Picture 1 (tube, rainbow, N blue to C red):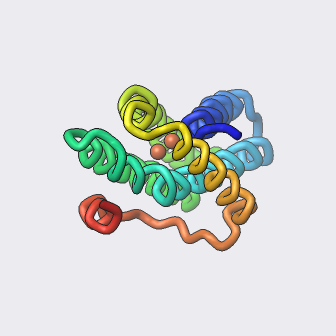
Picture 2: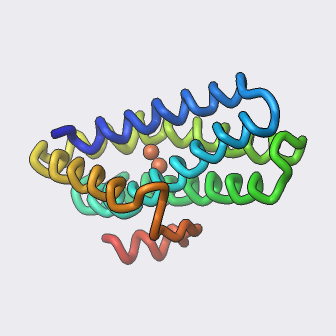
Length: 167
Ligand SMILES: [Fe+2]
Ligand SMILES: [Fe+2]
């Protein structure tokens, strides 16, 4: 079984490929096909992290930085969700749509770097391998239980309240 940090990296790589594919997509049909799959994956990934990774980062991560890392992450997830929502309100391929998609892209790139250089190293250092593998199994089960995001309700979260509820 994979540990959760490896599964998260797999998703991050898929996001980078998805945005690159968008550069090559031509016309509304191709743009829609690439973007809808990518946007949905971004939403499910953030929800999975908020349910499975960050509650454990708060409990097992560094006591000095885990709260700040979680606060940053929830704020970033909110910005990415907002940009996806803004894109959904625009005509695919229009200037307004590209602006929102670019916002999602740049916010996401910044966020992936923070997770990969701060959050995941912190988690690997403090959580033992049994926990990481068990969370990896939960991660895969979560994706399996919500095909195409079925049954999930994506919404912004208040970082302070999230930390309080999950500490
Ligand atoms: Fe992530
Ligand atoms: Fe994230």
